[in-house]
Image (cartoon, rainbow, N blue to C red; front, side, top):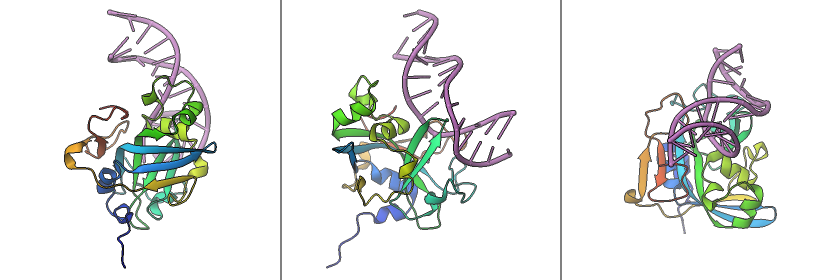
Length: 193
DNA sequence: GCTCCGATTATCT
DNA sequence: GATAATCGGAGCG
């Protein structure tokens, strides 16, 4: 009997996917330990969006943004940080959702080993580059299929609209007014309100 | 608590 | 040559 693929929404609009990814889980194996994280903050980027890396078309850097949904787009920025996106949309379309913050549910000690300077638990994963550091995600993971270990995406039921806050994106210089950032209301692991 | 600023390099002009 | 989907430390009060 036919079962709806829970990943179907990833092949659609990135703004809706960003909303829908809130509450979903990342299950990783880091240094041989299982780590479970809940996605609590996201931002949508797509091709007709001047803030998006895909805005100027397909290049070697942005190639995976134009590939199949559910893979990882990892980019390097500010000369020292990696950030992680979930690719969305149909193949040939350059869109993705930036994961800006996650809430650790399991594997805290492993994350602390990766980020020894973090004092509070909230400092482990409350920023796009912080969570990559905590998970050991680097350019090696660019293009990784999130169906596969050591980093997998587990879809959870959609949150209610009343649990979601929608606002403008952080750190960009173009299309700054677009309300394409989402986070879980009252969650203390977000990067900022 | 806050604001300011330096780090460091792939990518684009 | 300038910029960047960031972070963390310094200085302030």
